[in-house]
Amino acid sequence: MFNLFKITLVSVTLIVQSENREPIFKTNLKIMLVLIISIVIISMLLFKNLFFKSTYLLKSFGELSVDPEIAFTNNKPTFLEFYAEWCEVCKEMAPQVSAFKDEYEKDINFVFLNVDNQKWSNYIQKFAVNGIPQVNLFDKKGNLISTFIGKQDEMKIRKSINNLEKEEKPYEEIINAEFSTIQENKNYEVNPRSHG
Image (cartoon, rainbow, N blue to C red; front, side, top):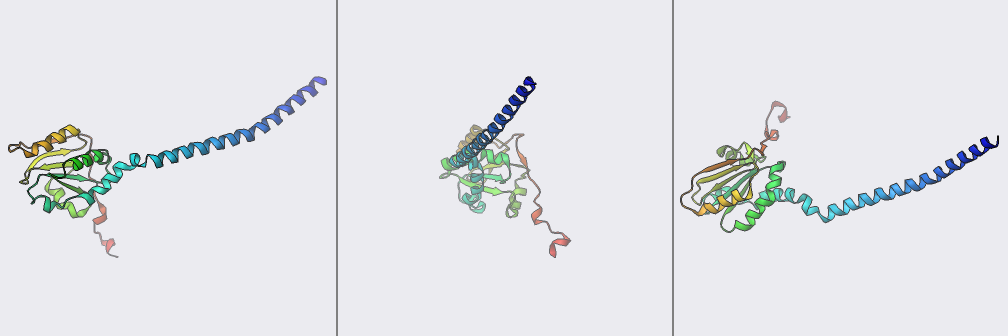
């Protein structure tokens, strides 16, 4: 009987101890969770430019663009990029393209045309844009010198940019399998129900 009483007393003691530990465990867990969430939020605020820089650059391209009509008539070479804000490869290349713009914008027109804007459909058709990003380089006379489709090595594009000033330039097309196909924009479609 004494052993049974002793076992019961030990069991009750263990239960009471475990109940006392649970609130401490739950409190520690809550503190850890709040600490982790705080670190994530602070990191995102501190490094927001790093996380969102490509998206911001891509959205700003349209605002920084030279009008294509002016670009092809002002006797300067032209860097023409077709892009879309949803295009992941375009986002990856945005910092590189922005660096080119910063470096060469005094000597070269930079034209950025969003393929989702119906306003540019004539250029999309004229230059047979099927994958983006697509970069077309033109000499100062408006002759197409190079076409780059998809993700490209910075040195290849830089070499072509530097060759724009040379008189004799053979046309080159460089396609990388890593590109985004243009999505059909249904916002502009007209159907019988769209007229109310």
